[in-house]
Length: 363
Image (cartoon, rainbow, N blue to C red; front, side, top):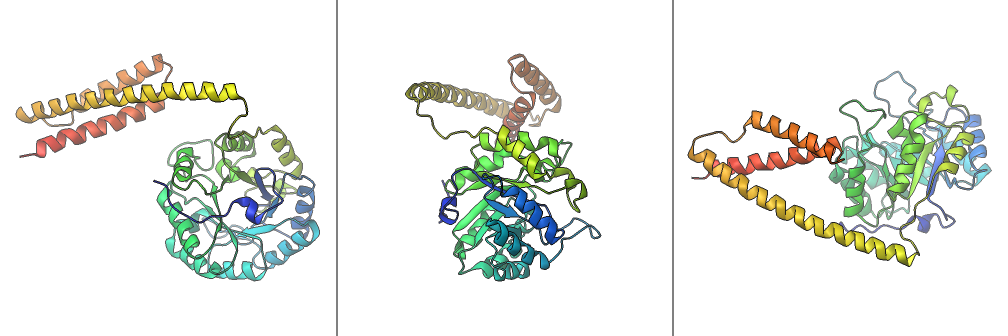
């Protein structure tokens, strides 16, 4: 079941938008000249609808550049005055939020570290309460959809209706080419649970490197997301933070030129008919899959009862290892993704062991 949040569409607070929302600007504001020059280059591209600039930068360890501080709010005001672009920055606590609201910024966003703390989010919600602020919420650092939704709910309960979620990826636990693991399934789940919530992607923080920005941006549009937040700097080689993931305004334009924006539906009647036919086939196959799984689990129960009668433990690790190797190999021969088959049978086996242990625990 979906979660009821009262949320305005993007066009409510950005009426001139006629394309996916694109927010661009430096990771960090470093000087007024850098802020304004970058903005003047970005505003030439009519696909850019808002300007971002980090003023306070939460860093993992002390000693790194932690932002220019409150003076950056004045630079953002100058950017808006000279370009007409709405401007925004990240707020990490109540004080930041109070200062940003006092400066009249158009957009605030809550970073991944802050989203992970309900206390911090509530403090920010208390400050923006009673305003018509636009607040964007990045996903928490770990793939916890409920924590992400909880942050949005706190803001919504404070009366904030101009809400947007930002997908920026998750702290990776293993090797990955990206800075943060995309884990797109969490975005799918968020959209399923809160279907009226606008969601944009931050490919800069997912990628960590310029060479991956295009593929992540295109994936975001293929997934039906509502826009992008991309970091752009007049000279990324001189950037004081995250230089590897920033693009010049010119390179950003080239990336945007390559992107294909997908439609929700097609006007082609033949397409709709064929799609419905193919979906009906999937529905029928899914029913067969579930019936087959149900039959499999009935046999698992029989095995569980037989093991109990013969005083044999539920988990047979050698049998499990042999089964997994055979299933993965068989799946590959059927052109199925190896990782998908492995995860599928891990889930099936976990539930099989659960069922058998429950049978053994019965009197």
